[in-house]
Image (spheres, helix red, strand yellow):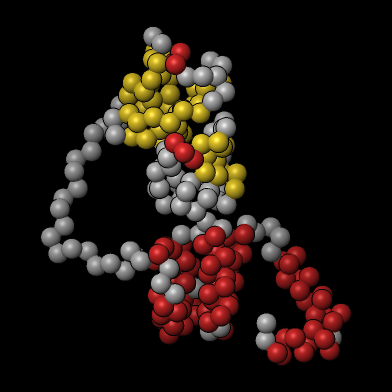
Length: 219
């Protein structure tokens, strides 16, 4: 906090208290990630390096991706201008954050063509009777990591990749019916697939059915 702001708080505590209350109330309908992204933009506009670093780290902790940060800066171009955006990117790069390490990598001159993808189809995942009611099971099927949850005769099948940055969530991440991504600690409820901590995107749920005692999933 600057010396000037400290002075105003001491000189006019009531007025400054109303000001801070206004700021808090003004953002009460925004999620933490959005609020911190807006704060990043305001710090870039003022070219406050310390504030930019502070709110950038908060935005990342709340699940913001590096691409979202860059897009927010570019969308604010009419207010920021190119010079401030370049200044902000220089500050971000100097922080050497691993999340931004790969964004600026130049593509190779002769990139290999992408392999042909198979059309979606039903895959035989597991014997339905082998899944314990009320528990989460992690398995691999045809190159896909999956989490399986059984609730009596209902079955849920989820892609094991975290929706944040496609980190493959391991079996060790399972605690009861809660899954925790090891990279940024997003937590998910396997009974619904919902993200219950840190982030705001659910696990990808795959279409599933039981055929002759075999749990099938479609991808």
